Length: 106
Image (tube, rainbow, N blue to C red; front, side, top):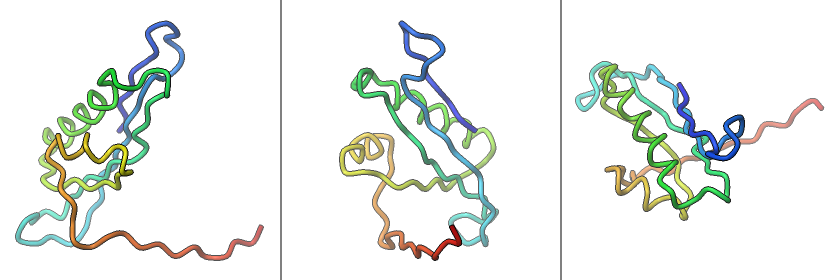
């Protein structure tokens, strides 16, 4: 699911967006269904920052998760955006993400 805000002066161009998916993981005590939301690609055009557009998109995505009974939502935050997610109730977890880059065939 994605939520977007169009630029006020150019309706065919994005000012901000937030994209999310729902993943099925093993259930547990805090999330018996195992359904977990993941938010990514939250971005705001530099000329349209500090207007609440990313907050609006992210809040709409969180409402979409709530309507589907999703109780756990994950994301990765840049240091610049962490304040936004903290203000929406997100907290740091003890297990940071790790990544393996496999060699390609290109």
